[in-house]
Image (cartoon, rainbow, N blue to C red; front, side, top):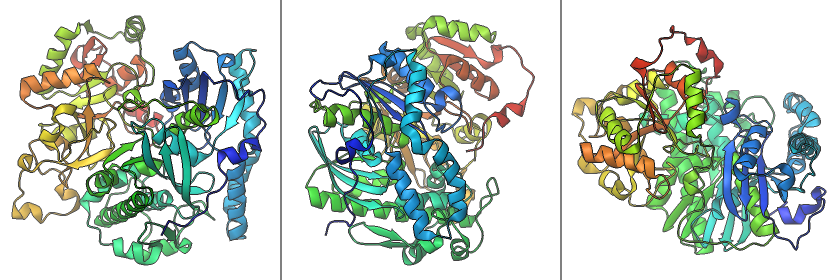
Length: 639
């Protein structure tokens, strides 16, 4: 039986919802700008003749994490990268339809009236001031960038259609099933699609308020983490607990069918009617009120995390099996915020019916910008796809890079002490520095697009070092001690260390550590609970081995990041270990660094030992002494 839900409000059916000026459909667009904004993770992306030239999140430039505002600086970067002005664009496309979203908002308030009045009063001012008249707002913002030039036509795609396009059109597959799961777009929270060449056909959807993404976010909120940011923490916390609440969730909160379709019992939730995700009835079900942010974690939170993670994986697996049965496809593409749940992705890859899995690296709202742009190219303009066996994301290295003169200018501005080395000298020297147990800030090439650092803006270390995780968490990242770190591994050697033989270039798949690398625990150690498990050495790569013997793997490929690959190879030649610890180059609450100045400030604020900016090597002990001042930590909101 196909999942229930209606196909509704798709883009081409409603292309006239907004005025489109001057579009000549017989001409093929050459330069298309995609925009996502106004909810969270604003971003811009530029396609030239279908080629993804540039993409970046606004947060990287404004230094405000998850910045939802109009992505002015991201747009300026994309245009500069392509050598274009606004008037050189053939079209600009927004990633969702605000009027349809407003329709859903009003219908929801009417359905729950008068219960949702407080939420209605809180939401309406910003809608009436900004979001309801988004067409005018976008034109005004674009005009301010155009410097008197003509504005290109403005188009609007649909939210889940943008997600689906970001997943399929940039995948390495000629044909694939596509599954999108997030909080909510206009109405859809889950949608299924069939991709074939340049055709992307909607199959079915599940609509608001029944949402796997909002369910996971409700538990994120209840365990004391921030919604739209702390979901990573909930996933990382799960292995410390036991899923003793999973049956309770399935009995009381989530009605799950064999085909993966589901409904939520809304009497436990507050997101339709109030200003929080859950209510007192939800709290009573789990034995007490929500955890206060920054309060000490207890076994309850760990068990709740384990329980919702197990339930989420089961829903996703059932949906994947149903989609495979319906379409007969051997390939699956994923997008939407839930697609960032790399534990669930790993289970789909190992246990699901599909032969191949590809996940959009910017699976959340930021990726909607590239999806919307690709829709104009392939769907609206009818341009064919070229599939050559590799994806079209260029390793997700789509952000700015900096030349030698700019780096010297930035470093000299801080009075930094540095030496410049060519790669033949720098790479072996770094391998030695890492082997000695030092933590290195690694800044090179183009900045990554999406939430993961992939060896462009990374903090790296030796995974064999048993103290590396705690040092990085507490002295570098200033974040919770339980959070795991990911391994970067030479792509050609991934199966030497992990139960995985397929590529994972975007750090979106969790895989088990190979048995032969594991260190058995004693009976006494096995009796430990919760956070007591943290400091046990579980494998020969303790810094990247989570408490359940898993790791979030990034395979590093010579074709997309030759320099990072060369560093891994040099470390392997020296240590017989082709793996490095890789975490994002930032501190807690800060966006990943963008510029050499960002990198140097972060380096000096933390206890990193060395910084590499392209071919410039900086040792912390040689830098100008600055008085210790922790007030900078107030600059960033806690995530």
